[in-house]
Amino acid sequence: MKAFIYLIIAMCTFISCQVSTENTVENIREGEYLGENANDSIAKLFAPNFVSTYMHERDFTMSPDGKEIYYTVRNGASYFIAESKMINGVWTEPEFASFSGNTNYNDLEPFISQDGKKFYFMSTRAPKGKEQKAGWFYQNIWLMDKTAEGWSEPYLLEGPVNTDSGQYYPTLTNDGTIYYTHEEAKNVQMIYRSSLVDGKYQTPERLPKEVNPTNMQYNSMVAPDESYIILCTFIEGNSIGRSDYYISFNKGNDSWTPLMNMGKKVNFPNAHGLSPSLSPDGKYFIFSSNKQIRQEKPVLKEIKKSAISPQNGNLDLYWIKTDFIEELRKEALKKQ
Image (cartoon, rainbow, N blue to C red):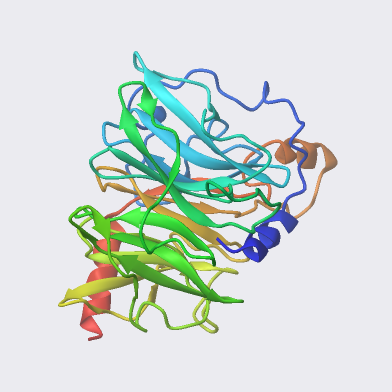
């Protein structure tokens, strides 16, 4: 997504990435969802001190079989995609994915298609034949194909989706329609989509004003059945944090309900919400926030301890059961 939004979050960071992980990484994680349990409807840190650490973690995707996870980690000014895999029931310690980790460009916002055959992500790497440039000069959607060895080499998404301006945060429906953020102009970002017909993406279209009511909607996630879309924005007088998660429901015939704030379950005061996602089974909403635990009476010893723990002001990943989304649907449709 747009560089200035990353800079806003970067200002929240006060922890050096040189701190040893020996005291913050739990070495053994076993079973489904890394051994985590989210049986209630209260948002919890996802895999604290393993995935959600003192660093800056955002974006999340999981393979359909539940045995691979990918998410974004910031290292200094660079963004890389990290991975962990379940092997013989045990999750490997997260590492930068083999296709990511080059400091010449940023990789982030991973998404695995519902059939597990495609891996989409945003990258600032230069397209073939073009010179690599620093910063966020290129912001395009790339993808990889599933192979017997893992993933193919990344290649630029063909068709009309990528342009000279920014495109980011891809998610897909069951039929392959891609939803993403498109930068129309400076400080103007809208949610677009492009249908997949005979293996080719069609001319993108901007979603209606119910989904794009302001000049700044970004980082959307569409439900696989296209029944709703969740995105990030700030709406004056209707926000809890500095940027919140909002939802719009598809009423049929491509008619959408006006954006609804998803509430205090996933939006926190003074915090940024930046990356919505769903687990492959649809049971969990997984999202990032830089919610910070503040002490009423600061104690230096406790400050030092919290500095190398989650919820220190960097982005962390949270998860919550999706049951509350159905309640939001009922409320939204009642207003129609």
